Image (tube, rainbow, N blue to C red; front, side, top):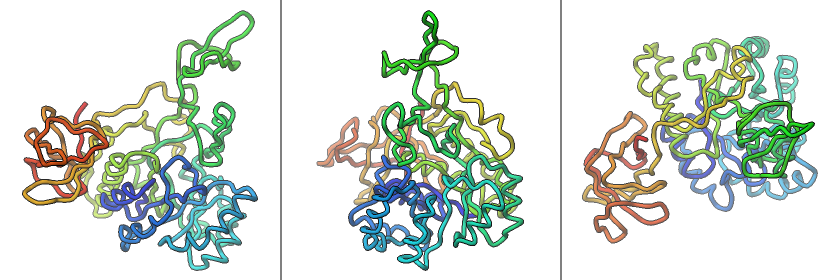
Length: 405
């Protein structure tokens, strides 16, 4: 099965491929359902061509297009042709004439936003020219298997890890209503995960959001601040065999707006699990990588809708969980055991760090040296400034630094 990782910018794209992804998906500015990801623009296509090499790259054009959006897309066709896309992920069928005209050799993948939940619909999309469908999140494993049995030439891609939405396939108006940011145009404010408080007044019960005192919404019952619509996160790491047996062709990780640490750790773990499954190795061969999923910020895990609806229909009442803090990454080796250091969170010499790599679970270093831009020793390094590191443990460019919480 193909492993597909998210990339919200060039740095994340590099780490997606470096840590095991067979393919990556990116958004183009103004046409993607993650409008607040950095997305790609200007001449970044040049660097993408270098990073991509022989791996796959898919372009997400998965917003719902209004008339002006379609005109805007056609005006940027020459720019889009510069990107080394292998396929486009779309949900709006109005794009078909444009893409077939200008990109006749590119594959078309149906976005999960199109809400394909049955074999009849899947067959229609195949006849329209789609080579792959990403079923609606609500589609269970039995129905996925039926689609594959009916249309074995149609590839099926499913989300296996990351955030879920309480709205039907992400078609939600809550963000637009409360913050004037439309989820269906790629600008979701994640209002379902805000903290709310319920107040009981004479004759009514109201809902108040923590950061918007005085803005009251009617409700039924409850007290204190709570996340009333925050779904559990999806995690199918322990069920890859079931997915394979159902005929799934590609496994997709959610998270174009998340950190390179998230991209690297999650991609690496699924890659190790897939290799074990392919080679018939026991779970013990990658068990320690499985534990790494808890190091990344996440909500409670669930199996989504694949097996039943019970685990996902109940909102989580727990905040984000994690065991480590992402500190930064190792850059270019400049000689004498010194590397450039890309700092994301403060690093201090009196606090041990751990390095992780594509094939290195982690290495602990409690005697590294930090250097400033003049190569002088310092005791801490902060984000936004130039620093270097001289590790006491073997590292390579692309390794990630973290510390235990």
